Each structure stands twice: as structure tokens, then as C-alpha cells.
Length: 102
Image 1 (cartoon, rainbow, N blue to C red):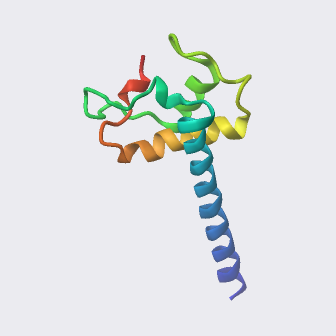
Image 2: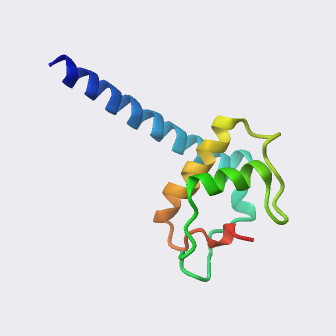
């Protein structure tokens, strides 16, 4: 019984933390840094270009092409949050993520 209680605690704590990160990432994407202004998510390829969390972390941290680096604007948790939002929630967008590849 003790193991089950511990497992349930870890499971719900982890799920809640992941949901919090997605919400933080969503706020950064749409509001705080307004990523949506450049990344309209209207990809011509219909979303065949999926980005991993690690790839998005690298792009957001260091910049890519004309996109500036955000390592001095966002903290590590915020960068991870926006990367999780883009890589996970983006799977549900109609016109996915290829607009992120510049």
C-alpha cells in the first residue's frame, strides 16, 4: 500500500508539473515573448517537420538564422517550458511547426 501511495503521489505531481510547464510555455509563446508574431504556425508542408524538445531548446537558447537567442531573456525553466509547449502541443495544431525552421 505504501508503494502505491508513493507511485500515485509521484504520478500526479509529475503530471501537474508537466501541465504547469505547458501553460508557462503557452504564455511565453502567445504573450510574454509573442513568438506567434513570427511563427504563425501556418506551414505549407502540413506539419511534416516535427521538432523535438531538445531541438527547440537549442534554437530558443542560441537563436537560428534571423531568430535571436533568448538565453538572456528567458531563464532555463522558461526555455524548457516553451520548448515543451512547441514540441508537444504543436502536434495538435492544424498547420504544425515547419514555420519554426528558417
